Image (cartoon, rainbow, N blue to C red; front, side, top):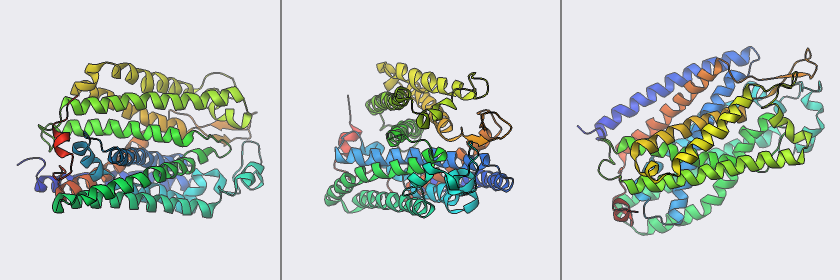
Length: 423
């Protein structure tokens, strides 16, 4: 029996679901226990794990719409896998971000600005913070919860429409579905751009609400596309060895994925460096503190643990994949491209850690009035369990969809061009 037969896929999705449920039960148990003891680090594991997959799925949603708008001939064979996966996007938001936002205890533990009694490093409380008062038109709890609900709604509608008309074309062969998909994608790209920017502001940037960056949404977009392409390479490698892409995926498909990985590796580095460079050049304390706590120990002035993490992002997440992808053979040899994809996945997790975890915790015993959350803690393992848990849910939905729908879009107008795609 083929591993891609409906019966086998049903068995696989149930195993994936079981893994996801068990892993998330463990993570949520520790998150509740942590909040009960006034600790937020375990709740951050839920946030990091969900945001990793939200980034992957937003990247796949954007790639689905971009390839539709440009009518990319190489894409249909690979795009169907994105269509099967993106159904999990609103689900992950509902299982991860939404419970954290709508629970008062978790909301106060993660987002300081929602707790008026929270003590800032200056010794003042959030309720008397003039910076928050100036931002209150955006950073208020009612509008925050409305935005979280909108993320589920907007992405849910886009995902539903893109999947419905693509799958419908498999059975009724109507060309009109392609035109509808083009129209929805043309509207969906700018709409998703705004939505993912707001999501990045709310879920990550607002963790340190004094800080702000107008480039933050673009950074999150670049990270999302990088992770989406890396997961696509890993998934298609698996599916081309005994799965439904066996004998169909060729080196030209790998080449185009590799070229996109190279392009967005450079784009991510450009955005990340530009954000750092502009803040460094302006030298405004309200902006520079975000990087300072990720580089220096406030008490001694020495490099802290996060400085090592930042060096990894420069060399491990950018330079190594960049240099590797410059070579043509890296982009067409399956094993080499797979290795680079895993490096990008690992680097993406570290990038999320770098953006989500460091924070100034009030400590009146310190001359500077605060301590910075360290990088090396036991909760890093819980973060990985969270990523595995949400991943189990994502791939359970993916495999369940693959058991019910065509895994190859047989009546897509460009499917033959995609199957026979060459450089």
